Length: 400
Image (cartoon, rainbow, N blue to C red; front, side, top):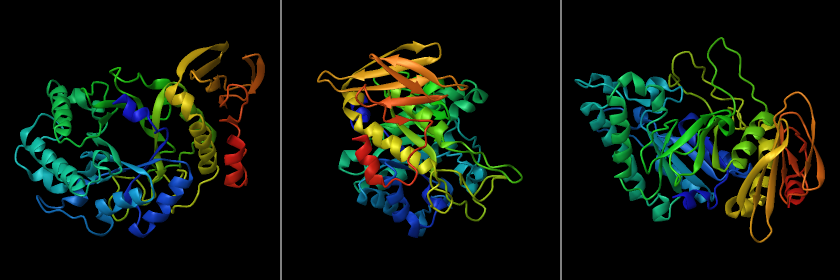
């Protein structure tokens, strides 16, 4: 399983398809691809797809199959966060309203009525994808699915039934035999073979790592901004900060990263949860309307180019790390045929640092990471937004 993930996936994106009109899907996916991202992820919204028990809707902008096939047509991969509890600042967490009328039901625990309807919907989605040949095991683009969503945040409230439910949900997903891995985000006790993953803004610093040596290190939500409530101020996260933590996660053996959000779109009608405004993650690399949000989009594009040009040592090399100063660290990947990449980290947020590495001197900006694709020349610093209006082909040339 680890080989599967590390083979060719280093960058990753999320986009919720129901928060944009279907006429925009193609152009948005093209902008995502141009930004150097490989994978598009979407939640699956139970309340939209099953508005009444056993009555399903996959029409119009709810056409999940069409969305996945558009991703495939543009040469990208897909990840399906089935949940079916998705949170996502979405009304009722994505649950259909009819669910609360089911006799004896208790949500998200070892409760037979809830498990019955959850399993029915999950199986429906999986079988739909299988019938269209959309899993990677069938030659399709879907390389990953998610079951549940940040359940560990509430697990303790269900006492002994919480861990029982986690094991049941993992087993239920695996037994659907998609042929691709499942994840549970922010779930340190995710049972084998389900992969535990990190959510947050600084997973290179906070993630405890996979709970098994045969699992990759994955970051399922790198928050590029934050949702906004009525009366609140927009949360502005800088391009430099996002780039720093992406580079740090890769330096520490991260296999891929999901930007939550890369494009958030609009919560149409009354689909947003209480007090959440209609505009969702407008400060993402693509804004609410799908326009490039600079400098985030361009700075991350350049970072993706650099990382992909280092794929041989990152995927095949041996990692070492050592101190190069009181608040400075080097992460180095060396491959047997001579390929080498170094990440030089300055954790001092107040001043520049001059460091020595392989008989050369390098100046690192405050709170930054310098990337050396050949372990000799620094071609990118996370704190230096220098692409300006350089044509993208010149970026390619500069980093090759």
